[in-house]
Amino acid sequence: MENYDILERYCRRFEPRPRTQQVTAKWPNGKQEDYRLYCFASPADADVFAAEFGGIHFDPAKDREGGRVYGAWLRTDEWKPIERCGPLQLPRFFREYGR
Image 1: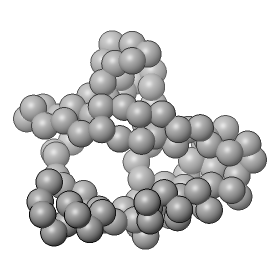
Image 2: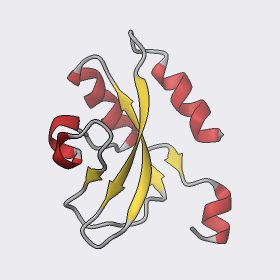
Image 3: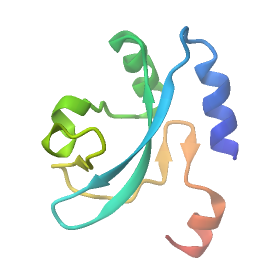
């Protein structure tokens, strides 16, 4: 919840506010994780957000499997656990008791 509050307050500065959607990311080694995407009206707004939170850009036309609307995000980089993204951090439960 602490991450939600930080993101909600931050996103109020954008007009229109970014939309969110969920996507499952898949890596070549078989790992999968669900991500919440923030979809901005302009690339400049997306750049500001990515710089603040350590995010990476997602292009649905190029990054989804076969360009399918509900396809997975096919990642080509190496999977690694994420514990911090800018001011956001993995919730305490997962840090203390494992993933």
